[in-house]
Image (cartoon, rainbow, N blue to C red; front, side, top):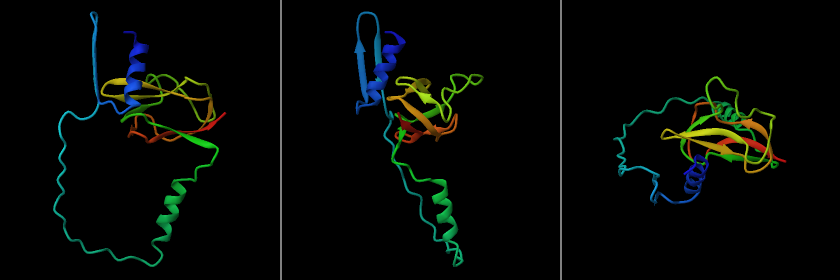
Length: 156
């Protein structure tokens, strides 16, 4: 199977609810599995009573303003490019290379925006439509969750 075909297969599986895929023929065998192997059990730690800290009268105004400044309102003409999987985001094909895209770049359909590395497999995240990069939300080598915004773009 060609690398491009394998990437398309992985993308198809990650875009659906399929958790396990097997394919065998005379030449090769492919097994893809998503999700944890073991059951995860979470146990809450015992709670400890802590006396509340004294609060100044105007202390709530500053944090609210800081949160609003950190999360600017999304303009209606902008769209987000979410992470299709959990992994580490890379904006360059190698440490010494130039980034795939920069703020202000016009991106064509199918052009690589970044890489998401999950379990030693690098997945190219490509543009689904022609757009302009408005903001790069996640830093290079930063972790990302499924559905988390990677880029803010303007559709062209």
